[in-house]
Length: 258
Ligand SMILES: NC(=O)c1ccc[n+]([C@@H]2O[C@H](COP(=O)([O-])OP(=O)(O)OC[C@H]3O[C@@H](n4cnc5c(N)ncnc54)[C@H](OP(=O)(O)O)[C@@H]3O)[C@@H](O)[C@H]2O)c1
Image (tube, rainbow, N blue to C red; front, side, top):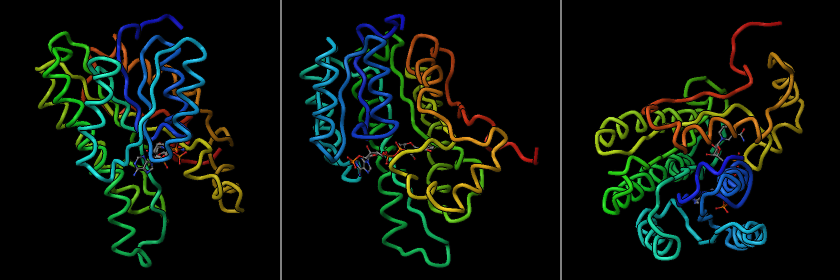
């Protein structure tokens, strides 16, 4: 690690487990002060304690992004403790799985409330603060929306999830266009399959194992496979990258056999 994020303040949503917890560790190791948010407060508190024990600046807060009116006040609390927010890793997400014929209105809404509306209003809350604090003017504002290969690939049983991640990819482009001149870079990171709370049970099933064996490298990715892309989009190197959907999937979505 090079300390390239020294002096930056990063917020990670959905930092209680899986990719979000990993992203928080990576950003802290690179020198950022990190605010860890999720609904399961005890888990983000434990991680913040771990990071503080390693000498990093870290704090934990409860945040349910499905309740958009609570996002601003939580971000204000973060700024009061750590300073102006310069990086948002908009990671909180749910899988909302189920076949389209069986999908209920409630499950559809629940998925969009977190994956689309939550991401949208967290980005808005972060951008407003980056503009007010001068972070954007300095050219340091970075918003990384966590999309998925599902933004571009049809995945049976995940119609709502795919639609939600396609929405994340498109909102990323428009936000990047609206906020680019004002010094905020907005990008989406689209990981392939990595074992986590969102898909753990699926990869225990025959169907899950069969799917993995159809990937060119017949394996799932590791969280660390995303580190370089995350740091590029969140750090100084991301200055001239804006409105991109960066797919990092170990070739999982390449068509064809082999
Ligand atoms: N794992 C993969 O293969 C993969 C691939 C592509 C994209 N992704 C994306 O990566 C992101 C993280 O997923 P993951 O794989 O790490 O799964 P995970 O372990 O289930 O983590 C999901 C995180 O989102 C949080 N979350 C869920 N609903 C929330 C809400 N209403 N408000 C705030 N936080 C909420 C959860 O925290 P709480 O329950 O504590 O709130 C948890 O920390 C998601 O956006 C997912 O779509 C994952």
